[in-house]
Length: 185
Image (cartoon, rainbow, N blue to C red):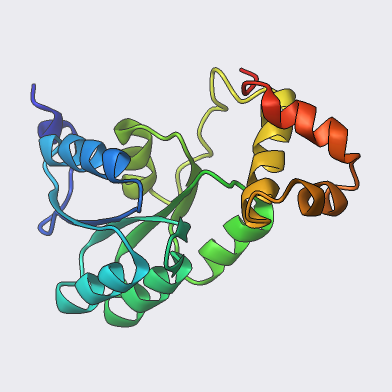
């Protein structure tokens, strides 16, 4: 049975993908097309807003952090032109406050990267009355979550070790040792 037969996309299978990671964007677009979606892609907030206004999709998957701004701006634009759109916000920087903000302005769900096409489809097509999904089989370890947080703050500080250490209340040398290591599993 082909993938698209497994999912009821309704009469309008249009999907907008907005992500500045070109490799991820192309891979997810191919996977979603195989599952029956009519996919359009954008690599920036500006391009995402233009496509959302020009051809409002029934579904959208939008990265939170884009080079030219915040993906929540695309969510707001899409909500203005199509209230019934099902929107999933994807990000490598998972934070509860951001998830709450995304849902408040109209996102249907919020997923942390890396998310595969099946997780995205489950989030896009989920019925709000359904019970919560089972917890993941292999969640990130506490060490990995800590490492991801440090990396996020480091990037927000434009890779300035001293500023990152100050914001994390951490000794600069300790931070340098952590940054020099590979990410934990």
